[in-house]
Image (tube, rainbow, N blue to C red; front, top):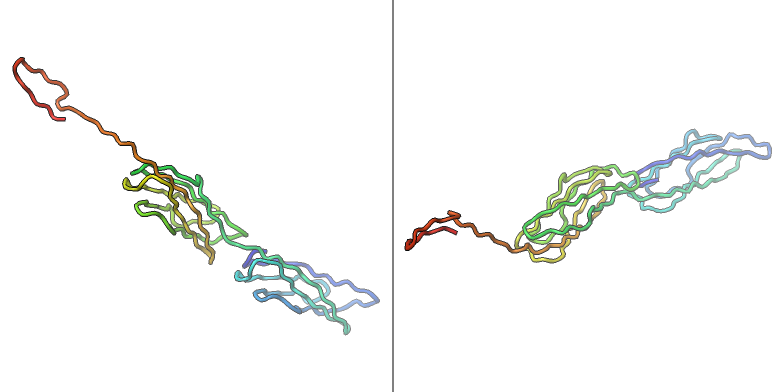
Length: 209
């Protein structure tokens, strides 16, 4: 079961030697952070286990004790606690952007272990002169957001990393977007005004470029 989740198991008592019950069931031992309920306390019962969200992932044992006619027996219920949370992933994971331009990547939020809390996203780190916008800044697991990166004209060509952090339900995760900045090709145009002149011999005229 996931952290913060619950699960149930049926406990059935079998008899021998002419003993037919009844028996009384109780919790003999349980780990910290576990709540165990037995209903009803008799020959057949449902054991419901609730696990706090603070319980670390791992394998645990819950021991149920049965008492009747001066006899005591135990049964052990093994509980596997799975981590919950979410993961972040970029698609595409790399952007190539020319100086002074922008590009976008989709950031997906994948739930782990039935996680359903809203995730708030923010820029954890980004180089100076590289602007990062997250739209929207909050989202549910199973959805995605758009991360737009704008590179200033002054940013030197090279490779950079943008790190986005998500937080929600006491959990957090990060994803790194690789940004390759390319030099903007230098170019210019010339235009004469007016674009044509008619000049008599021996005279002169002026154009603006």
